Structure formats: structure tokens, C-alpha cells
Length: 88
Image 1 (cartoon, rainbow, N blue to C red):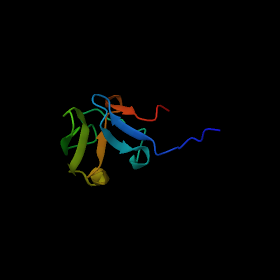
Image 2: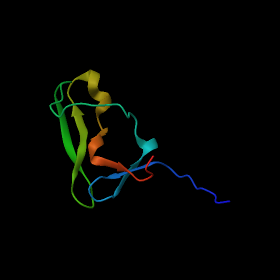
Image 3: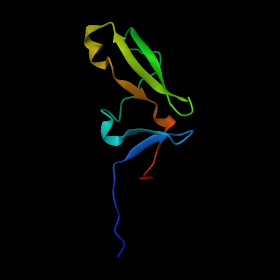
Image 4: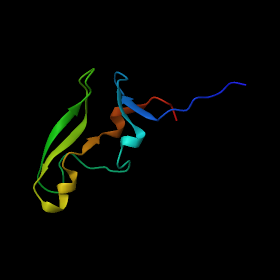
């Protein structure tokens, strides 16, 4: 009988296949937000794949409104820019 080894679910860059993060590293899997950031003024920096340079999302550097300070340091990865390695 063949034994299956099950590892962590991984997300990769859709363009080059570079491993981006583990499924368990993602805090929210339902978060969606337009780039215009309707939640107020934020300073953001784009996040790129280190292998192919594809823009994958952005990182919140600074939130100017107190109620959105929790976003600082968090990264938003655009779902359509990711592929999964495990094909689940």
C-alpha cells in the first residue's frame, strides 16, 4: 500500500511558481479591498515576487486613522496572482 505524505498547503506566484507563503501564514482568507483604500489614508508599498518581479499585492506601512492602525505591517496578496502547489 502506498503511503501519502501530507505537507502544508503552499501558495506560489502564479507567473513563475516561486513559493510565496504557507496557508497557515494567512490571517484572513476573505479580506478584499480595492486599491483605492476606502478605509482612509494609508501609506502602502507594493509587494513583488522576488524571482520574476510580478506585483502580487501591497503592504500597509502606515495607517493615519487610529481605528485602522491594526493594518500596519500587514500584507495583502491578490488572490488571482497566487497558485497553490498542492492542487487542493
